[in-house]
Image (cartoon, rainbow, N blue to C red; front, top):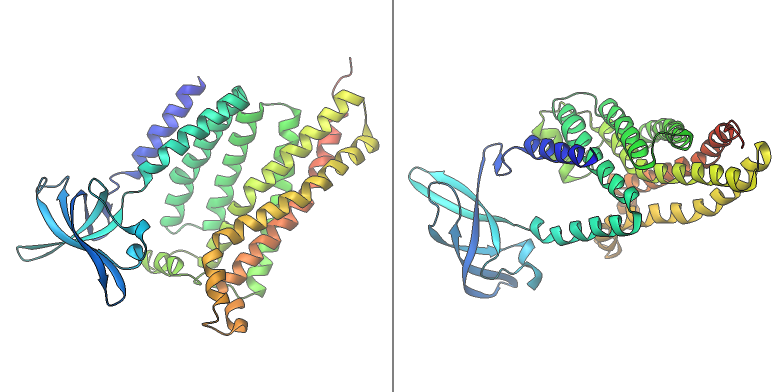
Length: 357
């Protein structure tokens, strides 16, 4: 049954994506490098001259000579070799066709990591590992099939994300951990902490005057949707999604701790609450640190750029992108801290009502 669920979710996800080479006003063709004609430096920039064979379209099998340079060929990791797959953008002017290498096909290189993750989950987690894979597939499907289409069509990004997040939480908690009191405590604790996260983020975005247009990607979203997307609320939705995983982790850990302590030692009421809370306090420090490192790890190139001093430090650190990242870390951390007593109280209440042998 579980295998069928994963299969259906995978098929639905792929079907929703449609033709990956289709874009708005862009024609993309698969190709692969046949030969490196020349490599070198020109005006201080590296470049390659390549023979590339087209792998689809009416012109399949045709070989064209193209140059590969710019930001993605600044170092040798960006250099191409015979056999490398690439995506070509086709532009037409009359009967003349012009091809440009848009990107290297990189996703297939990640499949060994996907397989390794699946094997590790099954080997270590057994059925829990299989269930976590199903939960992951369901989470991805919810965002691809429900949240993204709603945001793209101009619906409220926060409402769509919240509804999708609730769906993800229900699937992730109950599929992985089963339908029981412990899972109910984790789910309710996560939702309670999420309410505080949304409220704090809404206030912070207004006070900090976040426009949601602090990056090129955000500007492209705004322009590409004709201004239909409420960008500040999209930022708010991003904070929710960024906090969700850590909140679930904390809530499940606290619920599990409370029920295990109750079953092993027979603790109840206030004593059970305080014992589980002590475990949660140890968990808080490591998880908040992990959360901050994850956020700033993604922003590391930007942080290095700031350190080079091309802009005054006062201007750089007050930029919307930096302020938004710091705000997200702070709000997610507050949510984590609040999640501990909330979930522990709920789990203690439910554990006290488990019949004793």
